Image (cartoon, rainbow, N blue to C red; front, side, top):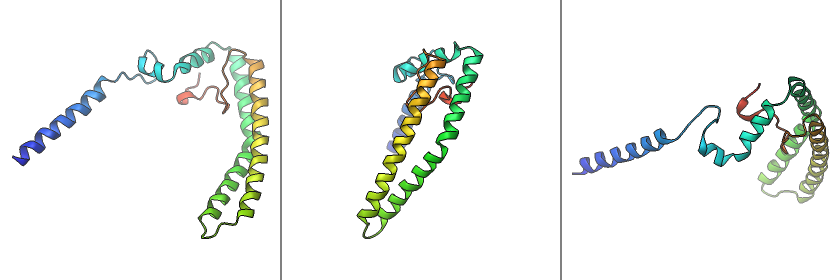
Length: 148
């Protein structure tokens, strides 16, 4: 009796999982997928806008993005180091509040520098392609590793 209940329960669970997996619409590039359009309504517009840019605009934007990454690399690395220092201090049995406060002030300064550079990057990208929606993180053409 126990074996049959276990067998029936297992078959029902597998059929439920299989039904869910096979009924989902999946397209590798996200095209014509209604569920993806509901989840990421702006993605289709961003991809279409990117594809409608000229090669000259795309190259300028890629160069600008690489310049932004190169300019902010050291800031991002310093932020990571300072955040790790805070985590390490917090793991000690008696964290030093003065050290943490000092690190927080340093992190805030670095975040301000990064934000100013990010805003300048976004404004420059808007001049190159006014209709392109440049995200807060500065991504232009990196949705799902896609490049044209």
